[in-house]
Length: 261
Ligand code: SF4
Image (cartoon, rainbow, N blue to C red):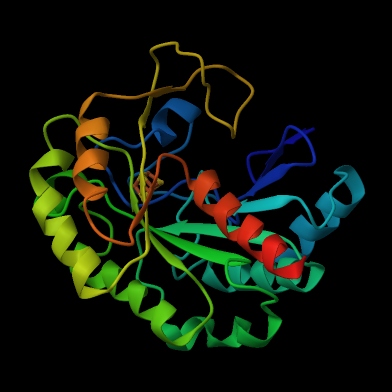
């Protein structure tokens, strides 16, 4: 067990890593404020990847089966911390770990070509492109890359063995559902194979608390519109619709294991 903000892990199954704490994305629904971090102006000093790795190696028992999750208290692809995120990705790819990176920034093909020779299987590194609204971007996600810009990240899977997933999370009541047709256009334009339709984190106590904290302050607060959205998206041929990012990660890991047998 480790909980420094920069590093969080309950057990060896999953480690959450942030190279800084706080974000300038200014999302209206962001949970960072409830966790004691700023989501408007300030971020903490960036931690060096080497220091985080050393701390992990000293304090946490993990193996190559441990899922690495980058960025739950930060935007891991900001200009100030991107280079440290890149070093972490290289380190964990070499170790054989599966890595998920969630972002509202554009990740370009040129930036991640450097990982190509380190990837052992399709889905060892997965990029989740977060978006809770398209038409309401300026109102709800005003400090992030525009949807148009961030969706260019989906170009990655055309030329590299790195799945890019549309991360429709959190589903915002009466907001996200308005854009289902726009999302369908994005799915078609980029020929996407995977989408995660995920719940908002809120203070209403439910069976499932967030996985990056032990404090039981935030919980999955699903709404019925998620089911409606998923039903609509399941009409698209060949599209896999998940409810959790870990389900998408599991899909690729199992596919790889199946091929290895
Ligand atoms: S990008 Fe993520 S961490 Fe940053 S403000 Fe938006 S929801 Fe919060």
